Length: 401
Ligand SMILES: *Cc1c(COP(=O)(O)O)cnc(C)c1O
Image (tube, rainbow, N blue to C red; front, side, top):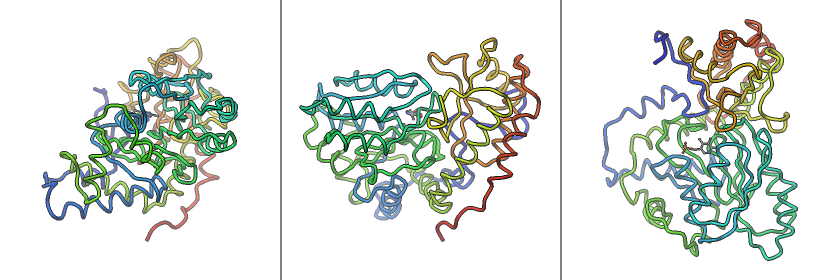
């Protein structure tokens, strides 16, 4: 436990994220009858409004007990048959784990490694698909936001590449750390399976696997031969239609989700995205201008608005920074995963967050770095961030109501 227990704990890992007070209050409810006559009054509007978050009118949303990993499994097992071919680029711990899941579920995975710090290269996808005359690839995967490296990929560009190659593969997008925080347009981008979970942009505890399927994915589902049971779509589709579930849903989580969706829609999705961008840019200014350090993301086009992975000088150990931040300043930072262990620490800046909260994380990370022997100037991070925020804080555009 952190040494400094008074005051707030500063949670700056890229998920689970802070649960805002209205959601916390909504979660604090008695158990209820999920087969009652009025239960669909909660669930049917919830399914409808979830579609607004995914920006789909044609697709179907699914809410399973589980997490983002469960949503991966649900998407794969409900749309694919054993041995079918998948194209995925690997550039961080999450794209790595996703590729691994395809393998473990018996698919023929074409994994292409690109440097960690970059993302899905749309131009390469076009070339690969153009060569695939017999349409062997059934699915192309994009990790929209690689949480391990703080890298965002351009999903619209991948769709464009797939169209340019006139390839019929489905497009799967892992949006676990981007949906509800970074722009995502399921219908417009022709995304067939969009994958998320409750504990990142949705500002809830972990516990729900949230995903959306396009009409094309629902059609593929009818022929898909992979085994599935708990995460099966057919049972969900049959019961969700009237507002019920095939088994006991976590009802407090659904009450919490109702409030989190209301908060997102009340703020307005475009305002939510703008806020994430502004906070992220402040953090990036702190890293580059203030501290003179580098991000793992290799250039602005890859930079993520939900998480920054900060490379510490070679002589330092990022694990020490993280342990000091936690033990001394009550600040939880994200660790470097896999080959990045010790080399980076991550600041998660997504969910229920504002600029001054981010300023606290910048200050805490800065002090922990100085404690760990990294030469950065006290106050330099916040100085750079606030300089940016002073110029860029705008009243949000009018949203719902
Ligand atoms: C967090 C995360 C996951 C895994 O989700 P869980 O909810 O931990 O199962 C998958 N992909 C990305 C991009 C993530 O950020």
